[in-house]
Image (cartoon, rainbow, N blue to C red):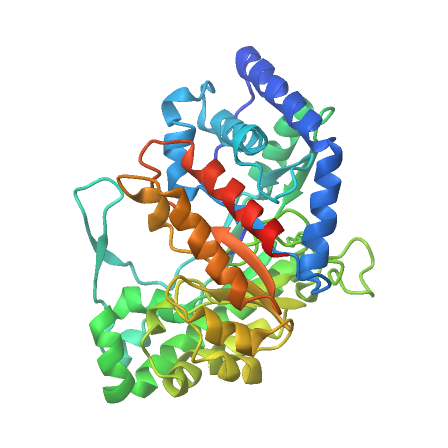
Length: 423
């Protein structure tokens, strides 16, 4: 959940055809990364995240729609290891050819650690949908304090030999074209309530806040304590990586900042305080600020205080909780303003003190017809209410574009055009 890592990607040497294909893609990415506009974007993104400009930035993350834009059937790699890097390179090229938002494209190519955090000793039970990308039902397995006592703290597991093999293979094939870097954990995520809901059941969670509050506190405390121990272990063994450039940040946005790493960074030993942290509690959308504070924030703030800058929120509307979050969350820099938040209330509270990370509703890309004027009107209305803020406009959670690849580029074009018109 928190590491740029996976145990499922087996390092395999590239065959001649795969190697040649990857090198051709890498050359194209290197050409794109050398364009002057990339440096202009880096300057803008850095000033934005450092709260030094009110100029809006526009980002689009296709996410689920990538399968329509670059179908798996179009990949040429013959192994999962090859296709992992082929996908990354093709996506960067696609951004330059089509999307053209404010994300800089850089020469770094990240190789993920062979690592993971273990779970909590209890196997989740789910009922899966039969439809493609359908929903999932979680069958409750925690109902009492006795069940919580069966939970185990998570552990860090890293296969160092596999990690080195991955790096060596990619470095040999592409290191003379791109800046190949091994990357471990590059942000800290703390999402205890959403995870616990998968163990106890959503309805049960809401009842238990009244009927069994100590059970919830015990479980969330164990989870947060375990994650704190894990990230501290990663710091101790040197498995952290800097992330103050083009890494995806929190629930949207980029990580560019001159405020990280800390001034006393020695250039080698990355610490938690040199990184971004993140927490969210989407399940608490309709929970009161007081209960949100008691059951989530009081625990999560212990995790977030380890990090140099923090982001909070994802899909949950936060307009009636901002004051509470400000009181508790250390080093807060970015707040997610979801499609269901009151844009004007958020603008009045955030002003230019935080990044206003607005996520317009992606349904505008998923309907039977794409309506450009509706896009224009919604973004113009947003800008009229956020002139005194530090806004980023982020299209994400795009599960489909109805196989119409023109929609995301057109959305970006309109968004940037409106931002230029409105200043």
